[in-house]
Length: 120
Length: 111
Figure (spheres, rainbow over the protein chains, first blue to last red):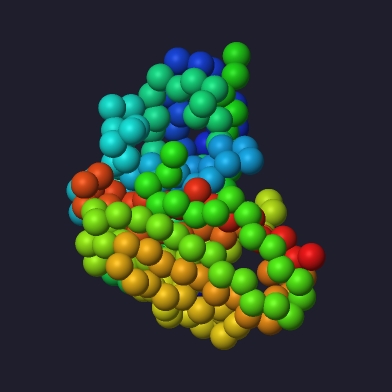
């Protein structure tokens, strides 16, 4: 079955750019919207944005000026970049896929999550 | 402040029934967008519990049920078990924000 695995640095300095990759295994990246979601310690879930396999994107308005999501269909992965990070960006970052092709939500497949700490 | 409003906590004794509300507005739930529910156990990724308002993925017990009416949705858990103690989140889509939105989450305590 399809599995997702986040990877990237666990520590990022303030003002720098956070970069994470989500590798999709067991299935194709095509025909789905792929999302990034984060969860600060002890707090709730926040949707960051999604990318369609074709490359079209949609971002959370509160993060839009700092976020970029890209896809590499040849490698079956998609990536997140979040610029000018502060301590408020410290969170567990998840990648997720909806249950059905063409839908944005109903995330039935999640990565295990990766903790990113913003600190000097 | 989350676009979808959930009670911070609910509790119930084993065997009882509890309900968790998710209140939205005319730009999300009230606009007809579907509501999905997730269960998150400590230290783990969220798990899809209910999709498209009232459907259970394979493997989710029928003790869990979802409903939607107007600008709100609700998750009901009957026959509470100790293993149900977790955080629960509702999720939908918001037309004004043009994006996915989550509720703030509800911590369920089994007494």
